Length: 86
Length: 297
Image (tube, rainbow over all chains, first blue to last red; front, side, top):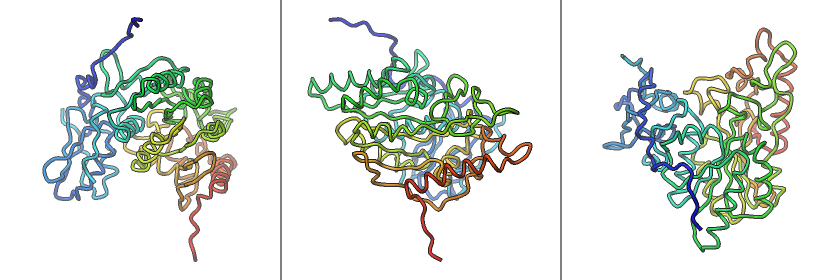
């Protein structure tokens, strides 16, 4: 029996939507203070922080909405929220 | 440690900045892995993660309606069983879909004993449609259908105890968790997936838009809910509470005053009588689950 499908979409196609344009504050990562605990990577609701060289967090500003959750939760206070220059 | 980022829930979804439901979705997929089928009820998570023709999900995902979430999951689970396949089925719904609209199908699926996990992200109101109260809305919270004002102090009814209702169905594993403790949430989701039969996990997920606080405070607010005893994180196996997160309790006021939905308890004048009633709810939770850490003097 053939079943008709409803709407379908390609997996992960939301990548087309660059939510970085929503941002008013930008998280700036101060690598000197970073303890490489990886908490920011874990708590980012976007999942747009990845582990870079030497375990340092690397944010993807194309998608970061600037919510500031990473800066708030960082135990080393190594993330500063700076007003976005337009 | 690092390397915990999840690639199964893609960037570019349209959740508010600091959304706890998005964080929960990432963590749940991280715990479940790629051999998972997600059934999603109507709700904020469904809307922000799948605006047609895009989707943030990189695992098989299906949305049908508000009310038949558990029924769709039952069907998928039964079909997989018949074919001898091992994929896991997770039904995801908000508290509106779970506590109210989908209750009938949820009860049916648990009573029939399908092998699936139902996860409710509990943000304590219908956020997607404009913050209407649900069965999960706590006492005295102001929502658009329980507005606080001269004649009302907000929602008049306490939160429905859904975990107990589902445990009473004979569910082998029922747990509550919070986005404030992500490793714990991950462990509970994995345990639910490993347990045969219908399991339920309720994730407390504060909503910055609906509750009225800044997005950066999402985890701090979730933590306060646990630390005040207004939300208890526990595990129930075969109807018995087996593990409870214990805390050194803080007064409920610390949680309430951070949120716009409880603003009327402090302005124009502090309402001691109502705050005492909410404190009594926390005290009752603490006594029921034994969450207090006794400090020796």
